[in-house]
Length: 468
Image: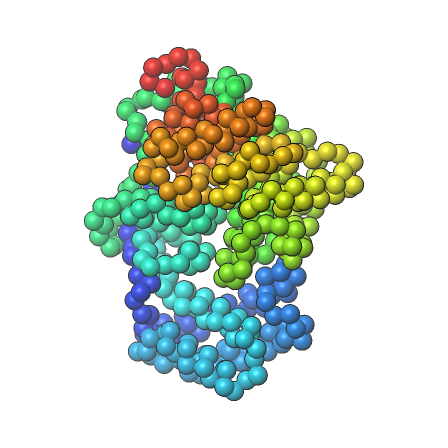
């Protein structure tokens, strides 16, 4: 077993269909958590409002949030009863608030956010004091994944999770393991993360391969936050994909200028020669974090609604110079939106910096994956395989029709002389990676632990090795 392809920990299960019963040792914990949740919200609510993810428009009501929190704490702590289902208790408290206060539906919805967070904290409580957890969860919405404790090393699924779940877990640096084994709760396991299918010694590089020796192939990394910086000081990716929204997950859904500026400063210092491709923040992820349920696509209306997010991210990005910066536009569902956003960003960049900006498209929607031939004036195409899997629903990732879909996108871009980048969980599978090599794809986003292995695979392929 390839040693970097292993995840270890104690196995736990959480079933979201089961009620949470308040027990004696939960009493103080629940009080602590309601204080902690409201404290955090006091600090972030104004940022959240300015960034377009707090529904209450009344500025007076926003100013009342601290008082609402205090009322909520007193009410909750004064009515907490042992031996009762927590959800029923919370429903009773909300009913009481509706009857006795003149709160709007938006405020009640916000109170439910707090109570849902509280219930989530209770479900994850058994994992808090465990060093390394391999977790299987049942009947859970993707939204619940954001609050997974740091002790969780991997989530175990019977079948492949959705692109949304994969993205959230990637943001949290939690591995995805697909396995149908009969695991025992409380037992320690060592599991294989990815399907590498290695024979002893096969595919391991027999020398230090330089990136120049891989041409025309290129390997890149996904780095979104300072915590994602590679542990290997010698790793030198040809390019880096930045998905900013994944960093916001670690800062309570809020984007902070100083943190993002520091991130780009350190990224540029470490990788001065790598191409840096920044995908505009995917509002769908932030929308899901706050459990809003509104976002469907990226257009100028959405950008204007959440302008502060884009302004902060781009101010941080261009605070320090770097010679190889590109932008990508995600979540596009028609060519008109892409053309308009593309034009606006190019014009603004030219106005501010007197330079031309390369802008490409993220193929992460059904429209963009199926209609790349309809797009114009883009520099590159970033294929999101996780979104593609959800949309195309293949029998398996090696199926000819599935691979053909991506080849069609690649061929259209090849004829247009547009660069194509590929990212997603499928690339963790060595057999799939080889099939993509054979089909002419040249630029891959891979995990750090697979970087040297895949360098060796490409090197062997280029040098005519039968077992590449």
